[in-house]
Amino acid sequence: MDKLIAPSILAADFGNLQRDIEMVNNSDADWFHIDVMDGHFVPNISYGMPVIQAIKKHAKKPLDVHLMIEKPERYIEEFAKIGADIITVHYESTVHLHRTLTQIEATGCKAGVVLNLTTPISVLEDILPKCYMVLLMSINPGFGGQKFEDITYNRVKKLRKMINDQGLSTRIEIDGGVSNKNIKALVEAGADTFVAGSYIFRSSNQIETIRDLKELANS
Ligand code: DX5
Ligand code: ZN
Image (cartoon, rainbow, N blue to C red; front, side):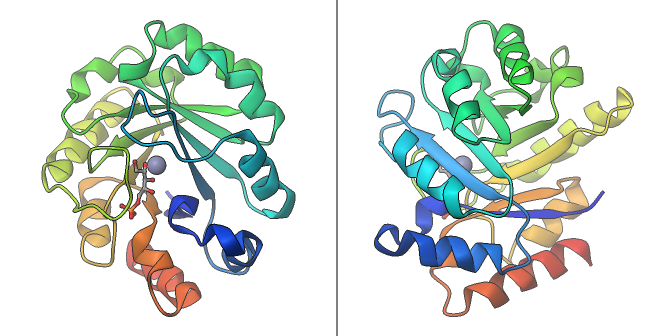
């Protein structure tokens, strides 16, 4: 499976958002990763609809929208309308997960489930066939620039086995602390889609950093 890189816009310079979006457009990156935080599900507030609309206006690649909000089912249609291509919801944030994924599919977006750092992989067993992608958090969500947690490797292995056992081709996305130090080992464990925020945006040559990550992942 092709390995994908999704720069996290949370780490962009919001005073120069268009410039940073063009950088991603002109890079080897595959998706824009869009983090939505509500100050309830996670202890931080990021950005909402007007900013996402502004991103969509310039983005030439799909928007991978990661909802860190309570009861995401309240906003699915709206996120689809303003240009989401993939919508992922946290297992821990919505009571009727199957209904919420169906709702996402009905908008024409691809649907995915996110697990917090220590939510057991086993909870995915019955919902997996409905997931285009599973996002495994490799940090506690809410902030960029945190340290990657090594327990992620084992979790990726478990999930890859579950996907193979069910004969599926679900993507495994990793979010939090991804860099050139762990991306290769994550691919070896079975992951194929990588969010990276601070590692990309804090580097001096962002285009090159994205190219290196992509090459490492595909090597
Ligand atoms: C955190 C977000 C991440 C964040 C990753 O809750 O989900 O997408 O932007 O940032 P880095 O790559 O800096 O850990
Ligand atoms: Zn994210």
